[in-house]
Amino acid sequence: MISKIRKINKVFVFFILFILSYTFLFAEQGTTSAAFLKLDAGVRPVAMGGAFTGAADDVNAIMYNPAGLAQLKNIEATLMHSFWFVSIFYDYLAIAYPAGEIGTFALSFVYVNSGGIPKTDILGADLGEFLANDINFNIGYGTNINKELSLGITIKLFNESIDDIGAFGFAADVAAIYKLPIKDLQMGFVAQNLGPKFGFGEAFWLPIMFKIGFSYTGIRNMMLNLDYMQPIETYGILAFGMEYWYRDLLVVRLGYRFQGKFDLNEWYENYSGPDIMAGLVLGAGIKIDMYELDYAFRQFGVLENTHRVGLTFKFK
Image (tube, rainbow, N blue to C red; front, side):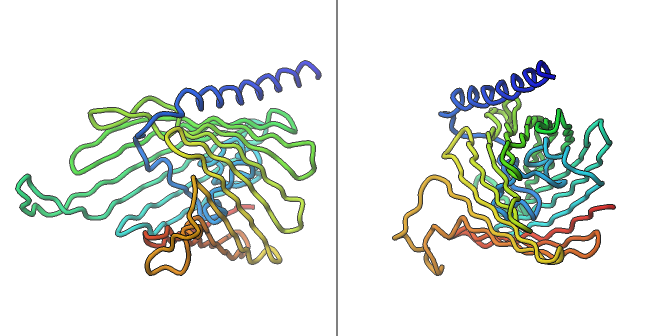
């Protein structure tokens, strides 16, 4: 038993060192490719500011921390539609199947559509419109190593298309969740989008990101999450999320993301607040039997507001 614990601890330490080594190696990189891989999916995690690394307790774990899939007891499915900037939208679908002691398997699909983009020749003559879209298919797996530690992996296959040009790529997320000695507190780690360079002609690094998160459920009907996310090409992101359920029927969620810095004296034109408000996310939902309908709202300052609606099925 002791030797088994030592082996698990070695895996755990290796995982942390692996993340740190990548962080130091690529911290000064500039532009990355396949930017759509950075989009948050799943209304519930989005409404908590994307702070879901330490929680990952539902089907959305495949996108945030696949080790969390091991926490699922029943089949779950979710779908989301996002009304994003201008005419851009993206859709998301995921399903997870717990297979007993073997672990939990999951599939997810993301589709991003840019809407019509004006097309012209080199002289500026109108040639109509063209489309740009992204398709991402994911296969996830999570399993319990023991009562404290879970590990997981998500394999990502994706394709980007601009007009009649396309490119295919692949990547992987590797993750862990560890239940801390403090009751109802657990910690998650994930390294996202690990894979070869990608691009049209000239290739760039994928948007590799490392996350560490904590989730606390010791307050009745409430979940509190805290994440630190480190992209390889820019400032780190600090995210906070809160979820509160009323009678297992109604839920309210709140999230906040901070990246870099904000200026309290800089007010957005035609907006009611300073740029500190741009990181705020609000959400709510209603649950009836096995169905849960959710909504999330986030404003991006001088950019437009965004809305996400979703439906989750939790089979009994």
